[in-house]
Image (cartoon, rainbow, N blue to C red; front, side, top):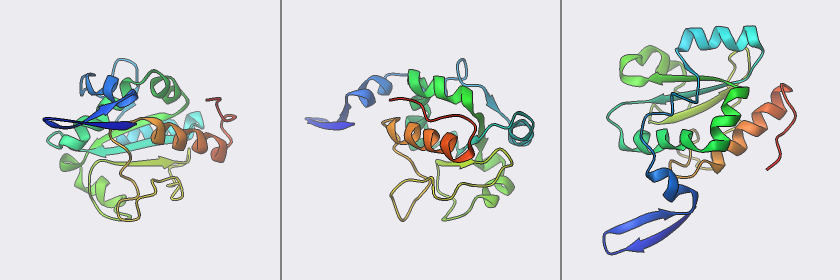
Length: 159
């Protein structure tokens, strides 16, 4: 993603600009989001890796991040995973289980089909390792592809 400065501030260009206009609804029509317990069970039974997103409804970063799931490649790739979304404020006990480097939001974890966190699949941000780019889906897509390779559930996708 690139940024352009305008009189009003900074705006995204490229993929981020198109997604900035998408609704902040997590694309539930194309991404099969599951509740936490059901998602963990599905990961095991289907032998699929898991994407776990912890968010809140009031967080502006979470609203931005939710729009990424309208990206066609990300929506397509999500079919290879069990997708779980957990609203942190209503599920503090679940959030605490994933307090690896803090309880900031949004946090995105890639898990094995048995629910183990793939701790090396994270951002390059040392302070907030599971806070991914909220404007460009490329980072999440790359991590998801690596998770597929690591878990052996599918060969790496082409770019």
